[in-house]
Image (cartoon, rainbow, N blue to C red; front, side, top):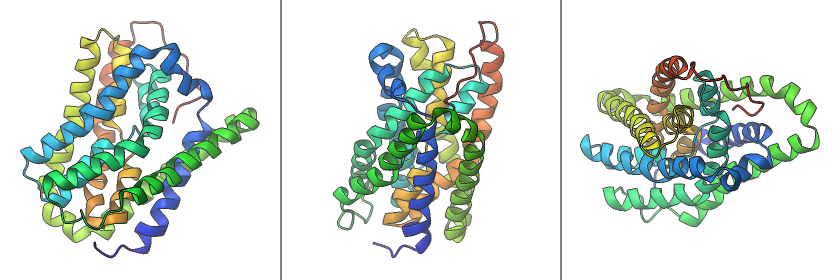
Length: 296
Protein backbone atom coordinates (compact mmCIF):
# COMPACT_ATOMS: atom_id res chain seq x y z
CA UNK A 1 0.00 0.00 0.00
CA UNK A 2 1.24 3.46 -0.87
CA UNK A 3 2.46 5.70 1.89
CA UNK A 4 -0.25 8.24 2.65
CA UNK A 5 0.37 11.90 3.44
CA UNK A 6 -0.60 13.96 6.44
CA UNK A 7 -3.39 15.37 4.28
CA UNK A 8 -4.90 11.89 3.93
CA UNK A 9 -4.33 10.70 7.49
CA UNK A 10 -5.07 13.87 9.47
CA UNK A 11 -6.65 16.71 7.50
CA UNK A 12 -9.20 14.63 5.58
CA UNK A 13 -10.69 12.80 8.59
CA UNK A 14 -10.97 16.08 10.52
CA UNK A 15 -12.64 17.78 7.55
CA UNK A 16 -15.10 14.92 7.05
CA UNK A 17 -15.94 14.84 10.77
CA UNK A 18 -16.66 18.57 10.64
CA UNK A 19 -18.94 18.17 7.62
CA UNK A 20 -20.79 15.24 9.20
CA UNK A 21 -21.17 17.17 12.45
CA UNK A 22 -22.71 19.99 10.42
CA UNK A 23 -25.12 17.51 8.87
CA UNK A 24 -26.04 16.32 12.37
CA UNK A 25 -26.99 19.87 13.32
CA UNK A 26 -29.68 19.78 10.63
CA UNK A 27 -31.17 16.40 11.60
CA UNK A 28 -33.70 15.17 14.13
CA UNK A 29 -35.00 11.72 15.07
CA UNK A 30 -38.02 12.25 12.82
CA UNK A 31 -35.73 12.22 9.79
CA UNK A 32 -34.78 8.63 10.60
CA UNK A 33 -38.32 7.66 11.63
CA UNK A 34 -39.67 8.60 8.20
CA UNK A 35 -38.78 5.11 6.94
CA UNK A 36 -41.63 3.88 9.17
CA UNK A 37 -44.11 6.69 8.64
CA UNK A 38 -43.49 7.15 4.88
CA UNK A 39 -41.69 3.96 3.84
CA UNK A 40 -42.39 3.82 0.10
CA UNK A 41 -40.44 6.85 -1.05
CA UNK A 42 -37.61 6.28 1.42
CA UNK A 43 -37.16 2.61 0.49
CA UNK A 44 -37.22 3.29 -3.25
CA UNK A 45 -34.74 6.12 -2.75
CA UNK A 46 -32.41 3.99 -0.65
CA UNK A 47 -32.60 1.13 -3.15
CA UNK A 48 -31.42 3.56 -5.83
CA UNK A 49 -28.71 4.98 -3.60
CA UNK A 50 -27.39 1.78 -2.04
CA UNK A 51 -27.69 -0.63 -4.99
CA UNK A 52 -28.22 1.10 -8.35
CA UNK A 53 -25.60 3.83 -7.84
CA UNK A 54 -22.64 1.54 -7.04
CA UNK A 55 -23.68 -0.93 -9.76
CA UNK A 56 -23.73 1.92 -12.27
CA UNK A 57 -20.22 2.83 -11.10
CA UNK A 58 -19.06 -0.73 -11.79
CA UNK A 59 -20.61 -0.54 -15.26
CA UNK A 60 -19.13 2.87 -16.13
CA UNK A 61 -15.66 1.76 -14.96
CA UNK A 62 -15.92 -1.26 -17.26
CA UNK A 63 -17.30 0.82 -20.14
CA UNK A 64 -14.34 3.20 -20.11
CA UNK A 65 -11.77 0.53 -19.24
CA UNK A 66 -10.47 2.53 -16.29
CA UNK A 67 -7.24 1.51 -14.60
CA UNK A 68 -7.93 -0.65 -11.51
CA UNK A 69 -7.19 2.13 -9.01
CA UNK A 70 -9.50 4.58 -10.81
CA UNK A 71 -12.19 1.91 -11.15
CA UNK A 72 -12.10 1.21 -7.42
CA UNK A 73 -12.20 4.92 -6.67
CA UNK A 74 -15.23 5.38 -8.93
CA UNK A 75 -17.11 2.54 -7.22
CA UNK A 76 -16.15 3.98 -3.84
CA UNK A 77 -17.72 7.27 -4.93
CA UNK A 78 -20.83 5.50 -6.24
CA UNK A 79 -21.20 3.64 -2.95
CA UNK A 80 -20.94 6.79 -0.83
CA UNK A 81 -24.12 8.21 0.74
CA UNK A 82 -25.95 11.30 -0.40
CA UNK A 83 -24.18 14.56 0.24
CA UNK A 84 -25.43 17.35 2.48
CA UNK A 85 -25.78 19.73 -0.47
CA UNK A 86 -28.30 17.37 -2.08
CA UNK A 87 -30.88 18.64 0.42
CA UNK A 88 -30.35 22.25 -0.59
CA UNK A 89 -30.39 21.47 -4.31
CA UNK A 90 -33.61 19.51 -3.82
CA UNK A 91 -35.15 22.55 -2.15
CA UNK A 92 -34.02 24.81 -5.00
CA UNK A 93 -35.67 22.38 -7.44
CA UNK A 94 -38.93 22.41 -5.39
CA UNK A 95 -38.41 18.73 -4.63
CA UNK A 96 -39.39 16.72 -1.57
CA UNK A 97 -36.79 17.98 0.90
CA UNK A 98 -38.06 15.84 3.77
CA UNK A 99 -37.44 12.73 1.66
CA UNK A 100 -34.00 14.03 0.67
CA UNK A 101 -33.00 14.67 4.28
CA UNK A 102 -34.20 11.22 5.34
CA UNK A 103 -32.22 9.51 2.58
CA UNK A 104 -29.09 11.46 3.46
CA UNK A 105 -29.46 10.53 7.13
CA UNK A 106 -30.21 6.85 6.58
CA UNK A 107 -27.62 6.34 3.84
CA UNK A 108 -24.99 7.95 6.09
CA UNK A 109 -25.71 5.30 8.71
CA UNK A 110 -25.72 2.53 6.10
CA UNK A 111 -22.32 3.70 4.82
CA UNK A 112 -20.65 1.89 7.70
CA UNK A 113 -21.62 -1.34 5.90
CA UNK A 114 -22.03 -0.38 2.24
CA UNK A 115 -18.78 1.54 1.72
CA UNK A 116 -16.47 -1.24 3.01
CA UNK A 117 -18.59 -3.85 1.18
CA UNK A 118 -18.37 -2.21 -2.25
CA UNK A 119 -14.73 -1.28 -1.64
CA UNK A 120 -13.91 -4.93 -1.07
CA UNK A 121 -15.95 -6.10 -4.08
CA UNK A 122 -14.38 -3.54 -6.41
CA UNK A 123 -10.82 -4.33 -5.32
CA UNK A 124 -11.50 -8.01 -6.02
CA UNK A 125 -13.37 -7.44 -9.30
CA UNK A 126 -10.87 -5.04 -10.87
CA UNK A 127 -7.77 -6.78 -9.50
CA UNK A 128 -6.50 -3.66 -7.76
CA UNK A 129 -3.27 -4.22 -5.81
CA UNK A 130 -4.74 -3.42 -2.39
CA UNK A 131 -6.43 -6.68 -1.39
CA UNK A 132 -3.69 -7.72 1.04
CA UNK A 133 -3.22 -4.25 2.49
CA UNK A 134 -6.79 -3.20 3.25
CA UNK A 135 -8.11 -4.08 6.69
CA UNK A 136 -11.88 -4.01 6.19
CA UNK A 137 -12.50 -3.89 9.92
CA UNK A 138 -10.27 -0.83 10.00
CA UNK A 139 -12.27 0.72 7.14
CA UNK A 140 -15.51 0.09 9.04
CA UNK A 141 -14.06 1.66 12.17
CA UNK A 142 -12.79 4.67 10.23
CA UNK A 143 -16.15 5.25 8.53
CA UNK A 144 -17.92 4.93 11.88
CA UNK A 145 -15.61 7.36 13.67
CA UNK A 146 -15.65 10.08 11.02
CA UNK A 147 -19.32 9.83 10.06
CA UNK A 148 -21.60 8.34 12.71
CA UNK A 149 -19.89 9.81 15.79
CA UNK A 150 -19.85 13.45 14.59
CA UNK A 151 -23.35 12.99 13.14
CA UNK A 152 -24.60 11.90 16.55
CA UNK A 153 -22.80 14.77 18.29
CA UNK A 154 -24.39 17.29 15.92
CA UNK A 155 -27.85 15.81 16.48
CA UNK A 156 -27.32 15.89 20.23
CA UNK A 157 -26.37 19.57 20.11
CA UNK A 158 -29.48 20.34 18.05
CA UNK A 159 -31.74 18.41 20.41
CA UNK A 160 -30.41 20.26 23.47
CA UNK A 161 -30.62 23.75 21.99
CA UNK A 162 -32.68 23.81 18.77
CA UNK A 163 -33.23 27.58 18.72
CA UNK A 164 -29.54 28.44 18.99
CA UNK A 165 -28.66 25.72 16.48
CA UNK A 166 -31.12 27.19 13.98
CA UNK A 167 -29.48 30.60 14.39
CA UNK A 168 -26.01 29.21 13.76
CA UNK A 169 -27.00 26.85 10.94
CA UNK A 170 -26.44 29.22 7.96
CA UNK A 171 -22.98 30.18 9.24
CA UNK A 172 -22.03 26.59 9.95
CA UNK A 173 -23.14 25.52 6.47
CA UNK A 174 -20.90 28.14 4.92
CA UNK A 175 -17.98 26.81 6.93
CA UNK A 176 -18.79 23.27 5.81
CA UNK A 177 -18.85 24.37 2.17
CA UNK A 178 -15.45 26.05 2.52
CA UNK A 179 -14.10 22.86 4.11
CA UNK A 180 -15.58 20.77 1.29
CA UNK A 181 -13.94 22.94 -1.36
CA UNK A 182 -10.67 22.70 0.56
CA UNK A 183 -10.91 18.90 0.57
CA UNK A 184 -11.48 18.74 -3.18
CA UNK A 185 -8.68 21.21 -3.94
CA UNK A 186 -6.32 19.35 -1.60
CA UNK A 187 -7.14 16.01 -3.21
CA UNK A 188 -6.55 17.43 -6.68
CA UNK A 189 -3.26 19.08 -5.75
CA UNK A 190 -1.97 15.95 -4.01
CA UNK A 191 -2.38 13.94 -7.24
CA UNK A 192 -2.12 16.76 -9.79
CA UNK A 193 0.23 14.99 -12.15
CA UNK A 194 -1.88 11.83 -12.25
CA UNK A 195 -5.06 13.83 -12.86
CA UNK A 196 -3.46 15.80 -15.70
CA UNK A 197 -2.33 12.58 -17.38
CA UNK A 198 -5.73 10.90 -17.10
CA UNK A 199 -8.17 13.82 -17.02
CA UNK A 200 -9.98 13.01 -20.28
CA UNK A 201 -10.91 9.46 -19.29
CA UNK A 202 -11.71 10.43 -15.71
CA UNK A 203 -13.82 13.40 -16.75
CA UNK A 204 -15.84 11.30 -19.19
CA UNK A 205 -16.31 8.46 -16.69
CA UNK A 206 -17.33 10.66 -13.76
CA UNK A 207 -19.64 12.82 -15.87
CA UNK A 208 -21.23 9.71 -17.37
CA UNK A 209 -21.80 8.23 -13.91
CA UNK A 210 -23.30 11.49 -12.66
CA UNK A 211 -25.75 11.89 -15.54
CA UNK A 212 -26.63 8.18 -15.65
CA UNK A 213 -27.25 7.99 -11.91
CA UNK A 214 -29.58 11.00 -11.93
CA UNK A 215 -31.41 9.86 -15.07
CA UNK A 216 -31.85 6.22 -14.04
CA UNK A 217 -32.91 7.05 -10.48
CA UNK A 218 -35.46 9.63 -11.64
CA UNK A 219 -36.86 7.15 -14.18
CA UNK A 220 -37.05 4.33 -11.61
CA UNK A 221 -38.78 6.61 -9.11
CA UNK A 222 -41.38 7.71 -11.65
CA UNK A 223 -41.88 4.11 -12.81
CA UNK A 224 -42.58 3.24 -9.17
CA UNK A 225 -45.30 5.92 -9.25
CA UNK A 226 -43.58 8.42 -7.03
CA UNK A 227 -44.42 12.00 -7.90
CA UNK A 228 -42.05 14.47 -9.55
CA UNK A 229 -40.98 16.04 -6.24
CA UNK A 230 -40.05 12.69 -4.73
CA UNK A 231 -38.27 11.64 -7.94
CA UNK A 232 -36.41 14.97 -7.90
CA UNK A 233 -35.17 14.31 -4.36
CA UNK A 234 -34.00 10.80 -5.24
CA UNK A 235 -32.19 11.97 -8.38
CA UNK A 236 -30.42 14.72 -6.44
CA UNK A 237 -29.26 12.21 -3.81
CA UNK A 238 -27.69 10.09 -6.53
CA UNK A 239 -26.19 13.10 -8.28
CA UNK A 240 -24.62 14.76 -5.25
CA UNK A 241 -22.69 12.21 -3.23
CA UNK A 242 -20.73 12.69 -0.04
CA UNK A 243 -17.55 12.84 -2.08
CA UNK A 244 -15.59 13.88 1.01
CA UNK A 245 -16.22 10.42 2.45
CA UNK A 246 -15.04 8.74 -0.75
CA UNK A 247 -11.94 10.93 -0.84
CA UNK A 248 -11.18 10.26 2.83
CA UNK A 249 -11.60 6.48 2.68
CA UNK A 250 -9.79 6.20 -0.64
CA UNK A 251 -6.84 8.40 0.38
CA UNK A 252 -6.37 6.40 3.59
CA UNK A 253 -5.57 3.38 1.39
CA UNK A 254 -3.80 5.05 -1.55
CA UNK A 255 -4.26 8.66 -2.55
CA UNK A 256 -4.82 7.70 -6.18
CA UNK A 257 -8.14 6.15 -5.11
CA UNK A 258 -9.42 9.59 -4.15
CA UNK A 259 -8.99 11.03 -7.66
CA UNK A 260 -12.34 9.93 -9.19
CA UNK A 261 -14.30 11.49 -6.33
CA UNK A 262 -12.33 14.72 -6.63
CA UNK A 263 -12.94 14.93 -10.38
CA UNK A 264 -16.61 13.99 -9.89
CA UNK A 265 -16.99 16.92 -7.51
CA UNK A 266 -16.01 19.29 -10.30
CA UNK A 267 -19.07 18.26 -12.31
CA UNK A 268 -21.80 17.30 -9.87
CA UNK A 269 -22.98 20.80 -9.01
CA UNK A 270 -23.10 21.84 -12.67
CA UNK A 271 -25.32 18.93 -13.68
CA UNK A 272 -27.38 19.11 -10.49
CA UNK A 273 -27.85 22.85 -10.98
CA UNK A 274 -29.10 22.31 -14.52
CA UNK A 275 -31.45 19.58 -13.31
CA UNK A 276 -32.67 21.82 -10.48
CA UNK A 277 -33.52 24.57 -12.96
CA UNK A 278 -35.49 22.18 -15.16
CA UNK A 279 -37.37 20.62 -12.24
CA UNK A 280 -38.06 24.00 -10.62
CA UNK A 281 -40.18 24.87 -13.62
CA UNK A 282 -41.76 21.43 -13.82
CA UNK A 283 -42.58 21.34 -10.10
CA UNK A 284 -43.75 24.94 -9.97
CA UNK A 285 -47.30 24.05 -10.93
CA UNK A 286 -47.94 22.29 -7.63
CA UNK A 287 -48.33 23.93 -4.22
CA UNK A 288 -44.85 25.11 -3.15
CA UNK A 289 -43.16 23.19 -0.39
CA UNK A 290 -42.17 25.23 2.68
CA UNK A 291 -38.49 25.95 3.11
CA UNK A 292 -37.24 23.29 5.57
CA UNK A 293 -35.11 23.83 8.63
CA UNK A 294 -33.18 20.68 7.76
CA UNK A 295 -31.48 21.45 4.50
CA UNK A 296 -27.85 20.43 4.24
